[in-house]
Length: 225
Image 1 (cartoon, rainbow, N blue to C red):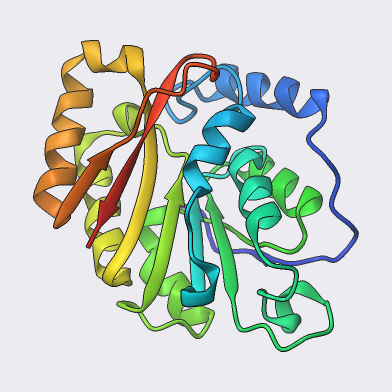
Image 2 (cartoon, rainbow, N blue to C red):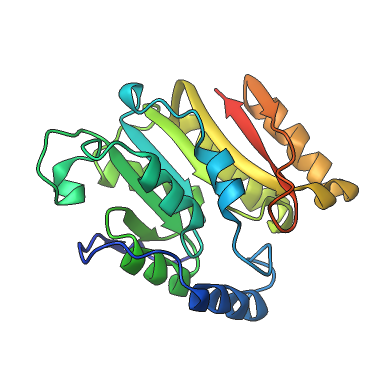
């Protein structure tokens, strides 16, 4: 298990670059059991992941498995300019929001930290989310929203269940957990096992429409505690 390393450097955000896709492919080849796709998710799926978040009622957002930062960018772009706590964003203002990303792959954690410095990035296991929240002064059970790019069908049952149970514990009542799966993956048993696990863990699970413009096509689960 990796040790926690928090980084938050303000060097200016850049748009995604082609070489990030190359880096994603390299990490897939090196760690095929941990990287669940051969390319980063597309903008249409990222938009579906963050659509409808009410920042006026949200104070803490976590991200699991940001990879090269496609969902990270979508979330940062969706935020009001003054939403982030100025201690995190290095911007003037009275924002109180916190945005923390947890990435298990060291190379990808470094990439997303460098490219999106407004996010506080931990190189760690998402199963340690409660410890990370406490380090950041966020009480478990009070998190408003979590988005995830983790490859759930590639994660063995025990660590997968551990992450989902920890996710449920850190969310506040009514808090949202959003993740996605590929449409084609529903042909395999593990995808249905995962859906069953979501429904047994959360009070409500909504299945979004297929995002056909993503490659491969995917849909979003919106899970409410």
